[in-house]
Image (spheres, rainbow, N blue to C red):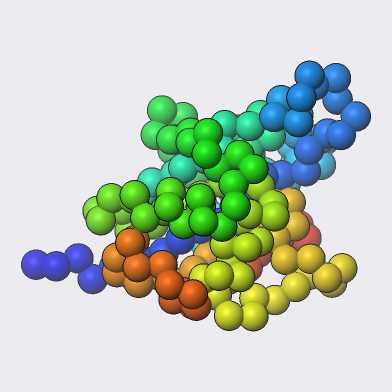
Length: 173
């Protein structure tokens, strides 16, 4: 019997980072106080919505790692189930699409965790006219886009997805 569960992509932008930290590089920049609050809040919200993730692929940058670890903890997903892909850090649309096209056909709910402007570009590629925030931004920090996707990860043509929800931390706190 075929699995009829809808394929979905969750696009999660890292939570607010600390620009005033003593990090040696942008890659090492940690979460700010607000980010440390928003990341687990998004995970709790996902759990309350009964959202499940089969496969997580994340940037290995410190702020992305801290974000996905906090979210995964709330979803009771073990850290060893998170796949860190260095190409996501500072990735453009082409790179993000290539990464998603390598996802297993068995993965029905995939989450990608990373950075802007790449994630904004990905969302705008997959979904026609996603809504902007009150301040005119798309994926603000710790925002989660949930998209219904085609049945084949290798088919990621322009506007192939349907936005189910775009949830920002302000929407859930």
